[in-house]
Length: 122
Image (cartoon, rainbow, N blue to C red):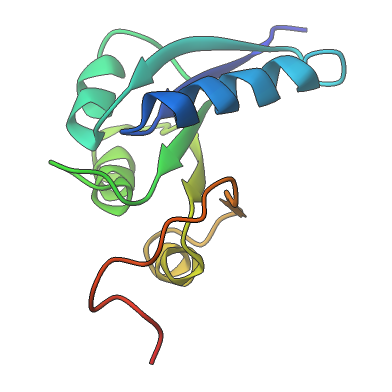
């Protein structure tokens, strides 16, 4: 069986590194290969013009083009877009992600960063 081809997209290099480690840890159960990394949604869209991915691990909150906008571009631009797992450090973005793409959302809790001003629940 061919490995699952994965692209990791996150504006924080340590987060990309951690996701890569998690995928390596899963390698015995689910064969996977990281075929690329991107730091923004725009980089992701450009990258996917050159590599084929089955899965994109996509941070929701990034500069330039956020993950939700990037996911919308994937759905509109590719006949067979890769599956998307949204990643985020903030619960509030997980709820918003379901509005854009009703798929599995994995909430990354490896940070204790406060919510940005004006983005609390309520």
